[in-house]
Length: 96
Length: 538
Image (cartoon, rainbow over all chains, first blue to last red; front, top):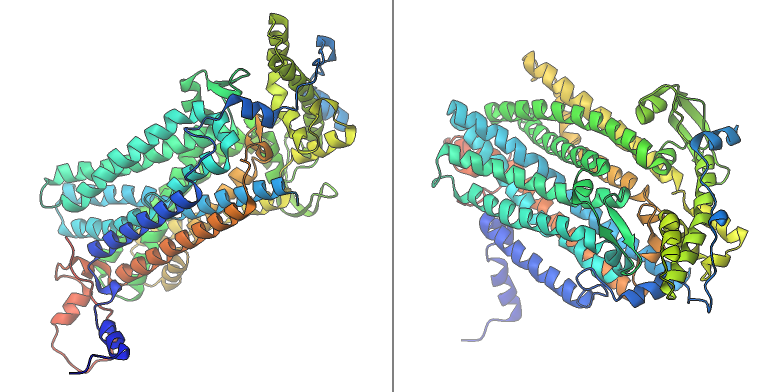
């Protein structure tokens, strides 16, 4: 008996029950499996090496990111140099 | 665009896309769980089996949404450590507790009781099963509470202080974090919006059955629950939205001014702009149609307090940026080894404006010597893009008013027993099913886009929060997320439409439309062929 051709195999596959004809519980279980698989692949591919492990980074790296290289002698700030925030009424008055 | 700008923009886009997709699933879970509690409570009180069928049928749709939505938020947590490492470091001490509690609530409370809800009908007494349903709803809301506490803290970072030794914010008072007014208002507003979403969903699907004149007793009762719960929820959303506006007026003046396109400070009480064309370049709103007093009353709850306009806020911000430069210098001095009490006192005095100084890092590595032009650019950055906020907010409010009209009218005709002739209302309810999702997404755009240029308001600028990554990696992960979420969304839509069309016949009780149709002797009929009956599940 000759082996079925690939066309015949595809035809036979198309006669299997469609995914949407599965019971709801089976459909959901199948989707959850697919979902976990996709999430795992995404996590392993793009997010497996977080720069902040357990929401923490080396302090020196954060310093380097946020602060300019420290000058040889950091400027001294005098209290008198501090600007004061105008009150809302001052700002409002100025705008008129 | 510089590579660092591209990385920040892509990281923002990725977070926005995943958060917006995630929130397509959340509101229905939040709201439908309480609708199930109401339906099952009526079943327990009356013993009427139709309410049990209602709980089981809408519970089936709840289950589909829950299964599609569960763990879709985990992708946001992936991004914290990888795309937003500096942000994660800054907030780690604050967010650890809320996110851990959220995980406990979601997985141990919510998921466990969702299982019991579906498999416990024959194993638990009526009251026990009702308690399970109640705990599902409570678990859903508690999950939202802890996430929104974290989100509220980003908008109003209370109960924490910057530690220059560890270069991060550290928790000072958990009570202040939990009872943060922004978080509380955000929580109640968000969950109430979820209740509206679920009510519109139940109302619309029930209206579809009524239009098709099938399973009318089932549909009428579902419609009644949805109309009542939806009306109460919409009123809550509006009242809580008003409270949200007041809170924004108190703690987030820039967001409020941007939402309202308030360029100038007007005499109190300020009028509200109903319509207009915001022009950020010229700092004005063209064709503005204003209603006097309303904004002042909403935002300040008084007739004599001004709503500060954007131009004046920019002047305040310039002062804070200049103070921030001094704070930056003081921090640099501390980090260079001078930890004398005087140096510490100096930094402590200035540190509330350090974040404003950090805004200059976008334009110069040497913040201390920033030029007036660089300061002016940083000042401009402190104001979010006005037009998207202006329109998103108005879109959300307009939809809220439409929901109020739909629920109020539905409720009115229902109690007058005149619902059936109102086919226009039933059709409107069906076509309005997707609108609450649009309103909720617009609300999130207002909330998050309005926080720019900060990830933590006034503390950490967005451009300093992102990790150092290759743009290509972000492009690929963004594409992966879009495909993943689109797949889930398509599956959800297919399953929801399939089971909503089948209606309560999918419960296989033998009492409802399609099953009764099957029992009738075959005769020539113009009735369209029924959709395939889903196989029974538990």
